[in-house]
View 1 (tube, chains in turn yellow, brown):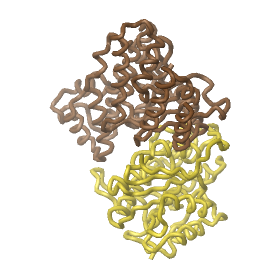
View 2: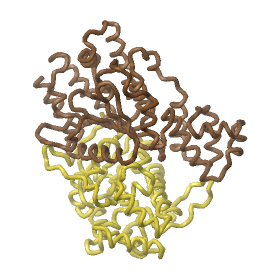
View 3: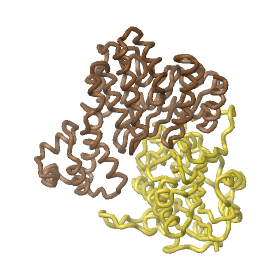
View 4: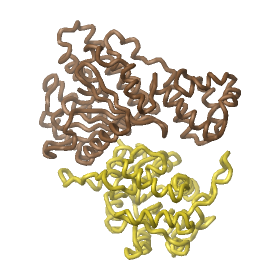
Amino acid sequence: MPPVTDSSSAPGQERPKIDTTVPHSARIWNYWIGGKDNYPVDRAAGDQVIATFPDITRMARSARAFLMRAVRYLVAEAAMRQFLDIGTGLPTANNTHQVAQAIAPESRIVYVDNDPLVLVHARALLTSTAEGACDYIDADVREPEKILAGAAKTLDFTKPVAIMLLGILGQIPDSDHPQSIIKRLFDAVPSGSYLAFGDSANTSEAYNEAIRNYNQHSAYPYNLRSPEQITGFFDGLELVEPGIVPVTRWRPEATPFGDAGEVPGLGGVGRKP
Amino acid sequence: MVAGQARNGASTRAYTPEAAERALAGARWGPTAVRIALGAQLRRLRETTNITREEAAEAIRATHSKISRLERGRSGAKQRDVADLLSLYGVSDETEREELLALARQANAPGWWRQYTDILPRWFEFYVGLERAASVIRSYEVQFVHGLMQTEDYARAVVLIANAHAPAAETDRRVSVRMRRQQLLTQPGAPELWAVLDEAALRRPVGGPTVMRAQLRHLLEVIELPNVTLQIVPFRAGAHAAAGGPFTILRFPGPDVPDVVYLEQLNSALYLGQPDAVIDYMTVMNQLCVQAETGTVSRDMLGALLKQA
């Protein structure tokens, strides 16, 4: 058995309920990438966005492809072996530990999410190689100290850590200071650590409108950020080439379908000097 | 009943594979589930790349009616043909290619269980085929340990409950089917087995205390496999999500292949493939997984139960 510690489960604790009557972001996302772990309410909410911005499904898949390329870069070229993946989402093909451990089986990954459905899926389906480790933390991205304390059971914070924030900070309003979340996380990791960041941007009028409509009906509004705000998230970090770009343009791989085009989602990778 | 658990030898009247397939038809399943799955995928890929059946046929040196049969799941296909079609359709992602090629392999491989047709009812044979094609097997059991996690002695005790007067040789064969099914878990490309088990099943000494202790020890070993998760629903959880009986949800590779719910009854089985029905069971299963102890805590519980047993 891989050394799985389970930092966030205590026997007999109060169990959350899964609410299938209101749409949930992880399940809507799962619907957009063609997954099977979504409910009619999630599909209805997802379809509402598709109606205004049909490209959302391509954008969602592009974001997963960006995750794969970013993790491959971090393992193969930046020699990262420790990952803190905050905002895991429902498992799909090519999750962080699978991509990392395919290259370096000893890689150690901590997944963080606050959705109970995501957590049970992650614990059951995102399991480590024998050489590496996976752990799962039930926490909100707004609690960096709790995340860091839990992750310290699996990750060695005296060594560089790759922190991944993909499609998660958009769920945090400006009033909760997303930039300070990144700062607090990076204060805890040594020089040579990396940030892999990707999120929706306000660069497409159709997408802006789709998200405005979505937010009117959602208990958890999504916050589209400007390219300047997203650039600000990398303050104090050295961006690796090609900088902050539409996720489809970040070190794209040749495909028989040609250019993947633009999407209103920006991503980049930065190194703590 | 449990997935393939109890009365393997009971009457075959109620559910034939044809009836099971009809039940699945609403979800676009056909004569053999895996072929249909593969065919549906190939058709979708061909259509999204605007390639005609004739063009596809030419690429694999066949006729357009062969492509048509393939896409409807009426015939299997050689690995090489499927590989050529995937290239023609521009599928370059290795993961996606491998998923579809795995389906092609499964669609062609003769089932090992064919040699047991004398004791396996056809409704259960169909399950064995589906189980083998699955990428994720999620089960909820109340009374017995899941068939894929049983020891030989425990399995024998369960078989004898339903077939107490069967000749010894027949009992042996029934047990050997179950043992053979378990090889699935350690094969290359093995499915994920994600089992939820009521604490009652672990406290009921099926086969007597010695057999049960060995079964608990075996569970502690099986859950070491990276593709196996066991979550126990403790008594103190009180009334929980699964007011009904045990059930199994099978998930298959490929985005267009729907999940199937398997419900085993006394002498027949139900295969639910309609999206509405599957959603209801998925909701209950997910709620059970949230209510049950995590895999790590469940492992500790197993250790404690073994000490008491």
